[in-house]
Picture 1 (cartoon, one colour):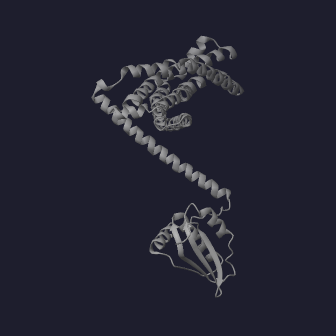
Picture 2: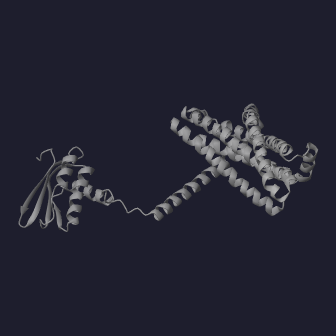
Picture 3: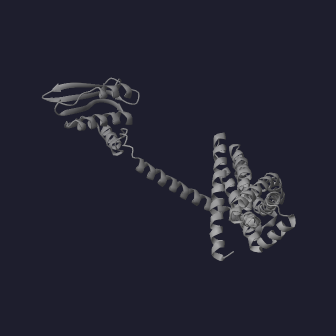
Length: 377
């Protein structure tokens, strides 16, 4: 009976190299056998005969070592013949051989252009998967919303009001301050440029159009994405880590209906209110700067605002607000539900929620701008 300690004996016989495998070729003996095979010289030894009649136990690791001997012989151009394998050993060798060469591939030569194309392709595929996942989540949320509308008793009005307070009322100070300062910047920079043409008075027109159509709602959406979108992801993500969402599923409750819908409804309602407040504070800041730097009176400022602001100018910004709110809440809640059981995952998906929300807000704003331009608004 062969020894349990695997070994490989090499003898030169009749102009060929005779390799005799003995003992157990398993994962326990693989380290020694691998070193023996690596140190073996097959070049210039003529034909190679691999005798497996003395093999004891053979597992997948040992089979890979046997195949490695065959590959090494083929590399140096030596003809190798395997004999003496039992039916079980031959079947295992065939199965491992069918898996392909497990040896580590040699590092390919680095090419910057190919690497750039590869990264671009991977990023495009990741963006496609993210878009499909978000679209699927929008469908799930829509179904839950329709179900709640069909049965109004399922709507959690207290939760909706609570989130309106957190995302809307509590955000007024930071949104108002930033909008006020942005209004000052727009007025100051606009006056500096228009002074070259002697048209400083049109700074008020520039202020009104830029704040009401773009800057007011865009600034409010970015602040809400960083403030409320991240909060949604962190809150729901923490519930995922604590297995509270799993507990809801176990009790037959719908996490989308309980956690997602109130946040989406609250933010869709709060965003137009924040947009109006941001517009007002931006106009106040810009008008104050105009009064101080352009030597115009408050009455003149009001008259210019009256001439510059049309109903469409105001509504263009307000129409965007619910859509931005929907995108921010949808992304924040979805990223929260994707959190796995670790604190690191919470941080990762919270960051992703902010980045993706701001990106989608900018894209949606660009689409709105093109659409309104085509419609002549």
